[in-house]
Image (cartoon, rainbow, N blue to C red; front, side):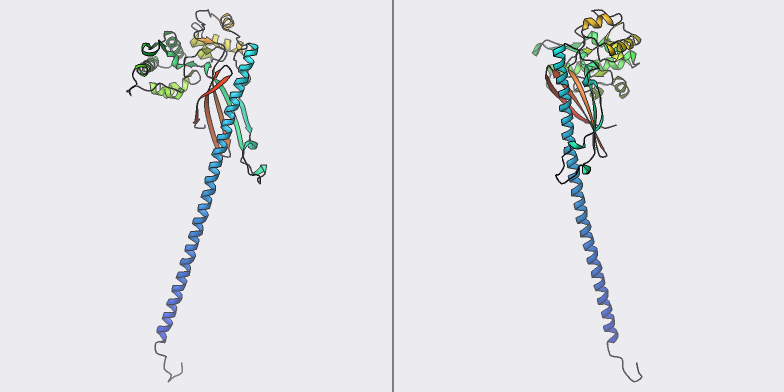
Length: 339
């Protein structure tokens, strides 16, 4: 500024005020951008979450439909097998269609899809499964025999079945004291269920195999017994055509494990057609050791195990099917942890 001229009064103040206004405007713009970005992110997250929830619900419904269809398929196979047995008089054995496992197969065509979607856009679905004859296993509920009805009903241990389970425990090298305690617990809770409707300290009567732990069976014993023991809604007979060597040896007095293995080899190509046939072909068997009260060549209870793989999700479901003639009833269904 030339000498002699005066600086405008208040000039520095106006310049400082303008700078502060520009700074405030810039800060307001930054806050506005941050707010808009936050709202946009929230909207995007909400949209993503809605899409994920919809996809999960769709997957759940698809899985339910497929599992119900697989169960109906299993029931159909059992009905057709019953019809065939009625016509031919054949027994239930491991060479029948129901005993053939279903290898994993792609089932994407079963999934519901929008009409605008192509087949390539469908979620991959794979189904596998098997049916297990539950009368190929010793029924733990056979340990208790109920006589009489109504107020005269009485529960007691079944000596022949206790002897059978004792032999099985010996074959598997399990502690016999555990079996004795479990049988006593089952007898006590059955007695209370018959005549005492009030809650008690005794365990509930097991309905499924895993629930045998309620009676005091250890996890190690449950693992060892799993392929040879079951829990069914009523007393049942052991199917000699499908029983394991251990169950067969335990159920037929005098039949050791080596001879039981020979029986399994023989019946694979020539199943038993009736109990008389089994008595004639099982080494050392008599009409007193193979009886109609404890043995059979036909079955009424089957467990269907279905495994469904949807994308990266694995679902496994077990169902107990009771077959009465041409009628099949589902006793229970449960989802289990996939291995």
